Image 1 (spheres, helix red, strand yellow):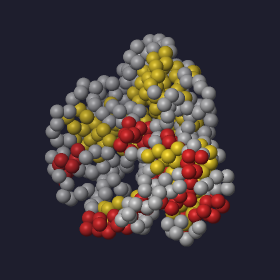
Image 2 (image 1 turned 90 degrees about the vertical axis):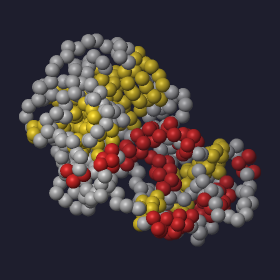
Image 3 (image 1 turned 120 degrees about the vertical axis):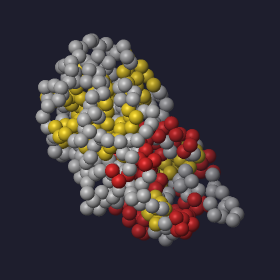
Image 4 (image 1 turned 180 degrees about the vertical axis):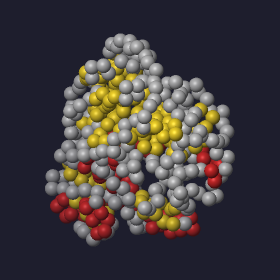
Length: 485
């Protein structure tokens, strides 16, 4: 649901940006017509057989989801990030096509390029050896001059957003020892920092600053760490006074997307009238704190994530898997409360012991005997997101169906899920999952099989339950992975 919320703004006087101090001048960027010209650090793993066309296989065009300014203001140039040099560096390419230019040369990760309104500078983030302690930098697309604006080794600054007059940069800031993001504004003329938000509760974080067209106000989203509740605030830049725009009862998510050109309305996305951004567990299962969730194929790519999300939502989570090794991984690394080895344990008795209060949600990836056993333990108004039936895919004859009398008696919901019906929910899922990964709340594992010739064996092993995590067949070197130091 999108909602327009009105509020009033006033005009601010614009100024011109100048830049001094903390500058490093590089040679002006040159068009790359030969892959051998790509530069990073001396031992960077640049693909030897690289074709120039592969330069356009980018990691990111423009800035972050909240500030996606890939185009230069005059529309002639596009900024993008590529790691073909061995690290994520900034590149430029003419909008009508042609050879790309490598703008920055660094062995550190760089991301989120955002053009200044006059097109003279590009703001971006860079960290140190992958530690995610980001600083905000500027680079001149014309001369290659680089400026470290924030230069704070123990504080992470992320997602820069320019004010309309090009004088100020708003960004998210988090000390190394904290989990809370605040919003700061940097004055590029006075080289001064103003804290727009302070003292935010430990279970909250302020994200996605959006400027008003007159530069007087910033709208931002304050998210709850569990991801089940968020609010939109507007803060006056001059006074740092914040006003809540989305008061509500219960848990609902409200996210600020943009401000109207006249400054009178805020475009907001919300789940208040129409469900959450994530599907499967959250939309169909609708977990509530304190409920019991059972996840089959819990060590697999889908089940492992579903169970961890259920834990984030405050549920008791029990997994099922096909080996003691998988169960140990599910409990010890993923944080499930319990895991049942369905090959060696009596499912009926094991579920009774692990779920003494019954089962509220069953996230089903397998069907078959596990589903039949779970149905005997479900509570009134239980929910069953039906994701897969892998235990039955190779059966020569259809298995006799489970007894659905319990589903009828308990008015339970079983609903199939095909991901293609929910592609529009992908941005919300990526937002939440990226945050949970950064916070260490979600972990994952890849089971990599080397060589295309082993793909048939890998697929058969997948169906037999050999893998822990996502099974992947690797056919060439992965340029997105950092080399081992």
